[in-house]
Length: 196
Image (tube, rainbow, N blue to C red; front, side, top):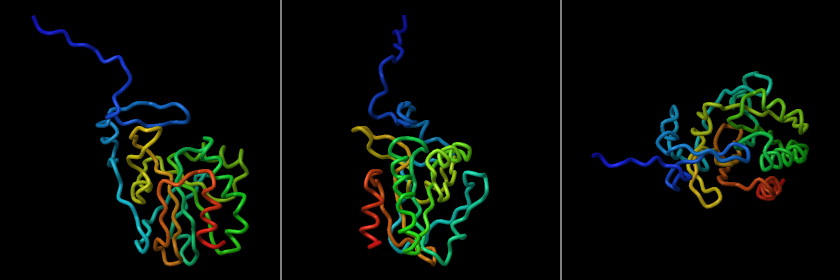
């Protein structure tokens, strides 16, 4: 008689990949996360002097926005996990509240997340955000910038958006690359680092 096979009923092991959505953690086997179309476990990180990977993404109104649109100006490109979540809202509102000072220093701001344009529009309107929020649902731009992959969250290794901020110079090169930034206090630290 063959041995009985037991169905796994407990929570997934720490070796499983986890993807987080809002405040609920949803478990996916690591192989499933790695098999997402073009989704590596860890994307390569950018450093100072690297050419910034170009992108053309839809904004909250569904209009295309390209990094090339900012050529000739410095632009802060920041990546965040999800619109309308506490940390991402805090970070976006900090950028909003410092936009005048950043603009006076010749800096534009662009936020990118995997959210669809409709969700970005609700987020923009609810928080009074006046800088572009771009949609990368396929996570191609996130991966190209090294802002998607494995990270630590609540002591576990998970796969998802790595909160990151970049300063891109007038010629489209990375002037500053910051990975795993904290949502709270990040804009103040960025302004201090940039002497703005």
